[in-house]
Picture 1: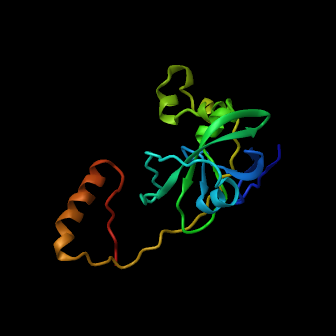
Picture 2 (picture 1 turned 180 degrees about the vertical axis):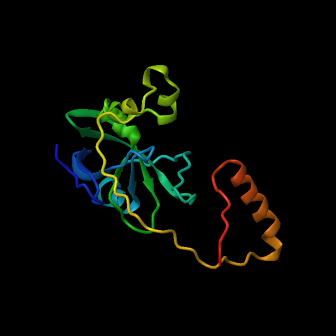
Picture 3 (picture 1 turned 60 degrees about the horizontal axis):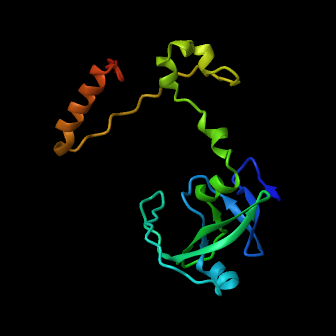
Length: 187
């Protein structure tokens, strides 16, 4: 098994043996399922029978992905071998196959323990055993750089007449919540 990763925006790749073919797949814990492009399917797996897929896949911006179908493949990762479903995307361009959560659960069964124990800070504040700020941030280091700068004041933008009432209502609401405080400007 080979894993390549970087601290910056390079993908984390893992070598996966799929039907005897070595594929470098990008680990994507944000993807619910494992997918390949239609081009990858044609190149390596066109002899496998494709079945229809009733899944609906949507990317972050809401755009729906076109699914060509799915195949069942024999895959081996991390010294674990299993028969798993592989979704084929009908994409206009080729892309690095994505190893999603369904395969991560099969081939790296403890992967969620690494990330799943993160606790919501608000939940920690409400927990009597975790009520001090020191316990909330224990084990973390940070540098805080403060600058002594005066606020920059600019001429106020004109709000279109049609929106003025809504803007005033919103500002009043923010003031009542102590999010903003009115100030007096001396010219």
